[in-house]
Image (cartoon, rainbow, N blue to C red; front, side):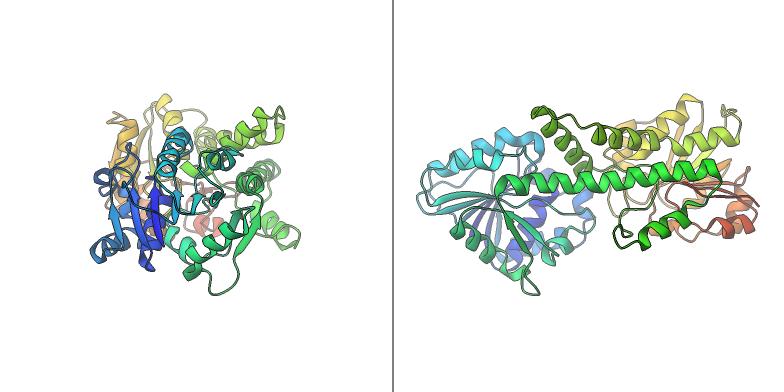
Length: 428
């Protein structure tokens, strides 16, 4: 198929790589705010497994070409939109331009997170009955984008037209051979479903964080509670891990989009507002534990932080807990020595050269030199099995604050360190 793809998001890069890898002829027009020259140097794309390599391979083979404007006089089978939520007007201009020069049948695939009903609005810009707009919500995960796209567990397809549905199935046939993965529904239902899924996941995380706070107050290890809840088949284990808050561009934007949708319909959601408030409050959890341990005497202390990215496997820090944590620590005059294997350029771009911040990207233990305590914020694999003897000798207060509950409290305490997790604790 001949595909014209527009956007500079991770979803756009992944779709361009995957669709061109199976023989489709893909023409990719990045958004002007992030042209190819900028994308080619982006850390987040370079670190996304297989995507960058496949983009280069497809360009060499000729199945992928990059353009700076919609090619004139070329008929396309598919227009694929993978734009940021705030680029809705760009999507409308693009569809209007393409539809104006297209006479053949056309399917517009909306892979962007726009307001509910936007796909129908895009179809209103098309010129005749054989041009149809469908929605295929972006379900990718950073760090696993290629795997999710090429080996999907399911696709939500918002489509009321049988011919357009068949075209999308043919478009993605190479990734739909193991089992039927399409769940077809009306367009508005698919748009709302995508937002509702992330709203539910966020609710589970925030609820578990509330339970962890209660467990702390009652002297209960929240891990026992988590396992007991997860064993209930009505609940399951997914997204029941308490932590120091979630972040990320897509998750956070989808929650705000869902809140906006509810506001626009006049249905304010106290539940969703509480979920967002709990998450923002949780981003200061490690700071409050540090404050309690030192009885508020934090001026002049030094803290090591492991991890800045909003999750392992990405270079991004969008809405990451570390940003809130840094502000709280600096307000108390705490010097921070921070290690992250990938996200330091993004962090430096946001916070600059702060006098109370030292950034390190080589040896995690170097961040602990001269520190009173260690905070684990992002659970990169390189942090999972540290040298506890070395940490005990390096950290003057021998305090470990585990924001992701990846360590065994009893094991850590047996090595002579003070352990404080999220709803978990142990003393030497």
